[in-house]
Amino acid sequence: MRASMSIWAVIAAALALLPFWPGAIDSYAFSFLFFVFIYAILSQAWNLIAGFGGQISLGNHAFFGLGAYATAILWSGNYLWGSLYESHPRIYYFDPVTMAIAGLVAALAAALVGWPLLSKLRGDYFALGTLGFGEIVKVLFVNGGDFTGGAFGIVAPSSTFDTLLPHYWTGLGLTVAVIIAIGLLMRSRYGLALIAVRDDEMAASANGIDTLKVKIAAFAGSAFISGVAGSLYTYYIFHVGPDSVFDLDWMLLPLMMTVVGGTGTLMGPVVGAFVMYAVFDLARIVVPDYHPVVSGLAIILAMLFLPKGLARIGFGLPGLVRRG
Amino acid sequence: MQQSETILSLESIQMRFGGLVVLDGIDLAVARAELVGLIGPNGAGKSTLFNVMTAIYAPTRGKVRFLGRDVTGVAPHKICRLGIARTFQLVRTFLTMTARENVMVGAVYGAGSRAGNAAQAADEALDLVGLSARRDMPTRHMTLSDRRLLEIARGVASQPALLLLDEPMAGLNPTEIRQMVDVIRRTRQERGIAILWVEHKVDAIMKVCDRVVVLDHGVKIADATPAEVVANRKVIEAYLGEPAA
Image (cartoon, rainbow over all chains, first blue to last red; front, side, top):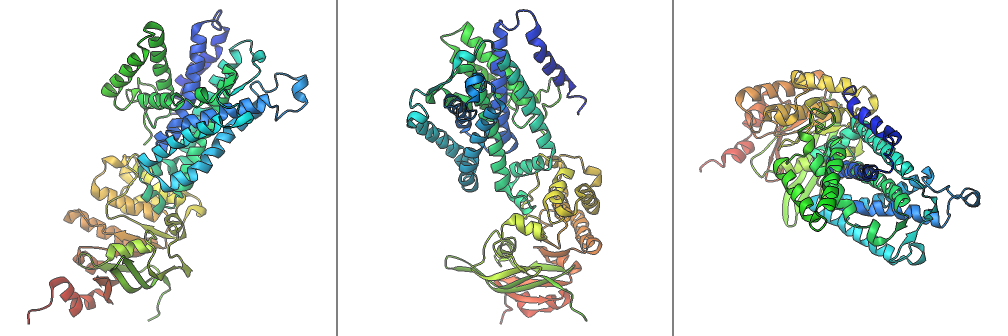
């Protein structure tokens, strides 16, 4: 298993070296791949709670938005670095501390809201509860006054931007890190508990698993990853507003990508993110007026002919078979 | 004869749902390494009593004590960690896992989790129920009989002092029943685990149990050796109805 994962390592290495290819940085493919990374990270996050944990969250866009806002607020208000910010005006740009806090803010929100939702609600009701949570967060940020910038949002200093290179590498690095982290997690005793809870919650608790704790941890982990993705997006877009970063698409697209790629598999969400984002983007370029129709059609066809996801075909590649 | 240590005791358990009294004043004790059968006609309250013991229901009145501790209404995962394992009447295995992964859950999270060496506990449990050869088989491909054995292995792997079996014979054919009886007997003998066994099939219980408890309409009507229970007038009436005058 470990040796066969090397094909993915080769792909990751090739992607890491791509910027050295003459003209690659200015090509369309470069920004395309950056977005694939963002969606791959978000898909992995959704897959953790829904695919491996069996808890369908429809509120993950809220965690993406919380991470984006946390980054913009810390940066524009200079809450972290004090006078250092004067001498180092780029200190917030891809600052690991800021990005980690963005993830932690999202994770904390997930733990707080997950406590009541995951202990009281199951299945469809949990899904609707998370959807409601997402809308509540959005409204709170619209009415957040100066702190959140109201309906307009917050602008971060875009003067720091000169190339997409750090975005590309950070996106790729985070994607690889998330895959490795979730891969290791699912081989650990925690992963065993998470699958047990997904398969049969009653049997899991009868065998000594604190199911609520396991579910909250998965939800918070999913939120952390989504929050970091939101932070990365802020460094690209420099403007966070309630209608942009709390848009339902930040949950719906990763959901579709994961389902098309293969729910509950390690590499399925990544393959799904690449394929679906290519389909969406191609439709947007070739048939700009009809692209939602083409994208919708692609999803319907995928579900009709690949009900278990692209990953189940396997392509002879490792990491695409559902665990167990 | 010296009485061995009591590990589980139910003290005047009453359970009512609204106006319906399902269990009324049940006292029951299980000693270390004892094999006790719990039988009774349909609706006698066997399953309800089972659910009280595993804290799925909190009794309206009465207490459940285990190893000297009051465990009435304690969360199910804590009950397991204290040393009570259980199986389910409608089998509950983790279907996307292999047989060994299922048993690993019990070994890693159960009462023996602090002792370490979960892998060894899991392999020994699989060996005990005779599933070693199928350890890497996905559970969803296993027969009902194998899944029932797997549930027992998962319980044994958690290294409990007491194993509660909820109708382990349901849906099994005669060959499988003989195999199951053998496994239950060996679980007690080789591992020293006390077993409280709820069953519909009375003959199987009578053959192997040290003691048989009979419930009828939520009341305990007999608690004695199998030989005494089959001769008990109240038990015969509960199963066959009152004799014609």
